[in-house]
Image: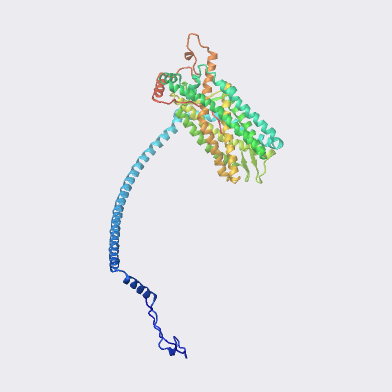
Length: 556
């Protein structure tokens, strides 16, 4: 490639300098072409040196590229048109479907609304009938009887329990636990071992006294009449064997529940002593003492007096499995609701700034109460707790007796009496009740400690109340059915043993014909009622469990 700028030959003297060049050297050089022109010229020269076929191939490639681009562009346009058309079509179908669905949903909602209104009307009528029924069949009198009985057999023991809880805690904390935490832990261990031993050496052997080789206990556990049990044993022997196994396992679970509770109590007691928290050790020990006294007082009063009886005197055999589950659900919900109400009432009743945590009552400055003020505030707190617990137990006792009598075509009525018998229940019911209460109180206290460790104690009173009461309700509710079925088994075994001792069987007569459960009446149930219940058992694959003869209150 040649240089386009030509220079003149020779040399010239420069005498004057102009703006762009030497004046004496002639006209200034031409301005060089721009960069783009030089690049185009270089490209042109490069392609001019190539063979002719190469240049034609390049031209052909350019044409093909152009045609390909046009086709691609056309395809993109057609694809866009198809896509847009599809989107419009899909949108139309979608909108149409949404309209159709909406129409159907609206029609369905109107239909459901109409049916729901009709169902609501029917439910309201049924509820009105249910509410009026107790008045018609004298169940209001039974409800009054349950209220009166629970005020005595539950309210008074709860009042005593909470007073003992508060006073024992505030007495032991400064005088024993703070001075000798090891002694407090030793006392706790001894009390826990005694509670566990009561199951293995007293309660379980008493349940094994069944004079009919565990048959009475199983019938009581599942709320079966002798006729129902005979049908199951004959038609479904595998089912009867499974029921026997479940009864034995539930009895072991009640004992295991006590073991779990005592392990938690001992662990919390040791943790309080090791971490320098004597209040925790004291609370565990005072809770144990409280629950022992409560269990003994409840069962003593239950054996002493009664205010309710069966209306027609028909023999009953216990609450069945479905109704027992209903009782458990109601007990759980009422325990939670009354626990929340209890905390709110206590906070309202105490002077402003005062607070309560279990047995500990503090004033507005955060100091523990003592002396006369402690006694006054403790009595106030105990009274509110006793009232709320009485409400829970009244509803539970009413439902239990309602289902127990309804299953045999009977009802309940107000009937004041002082039987003053069956004090042997202190040796089995009280022990089972202690297992229930200790497990609920121990698990709730352990959960409280975990929550406090996580939140560093920065929890609102409302959340703390909900957390504690929910834990207590869950602990009672999850074990309600198991514990109350064991109550029934013990009750029927005690009755069978007493009957066998008072009326020993004749050698020529089978035990099953001679030994029967002690019920509200000596007369057997009507044949038609038994036939109906036997038919139900045959139609079901699962047995119907048992009734609640004695109830327990929350360990709050």
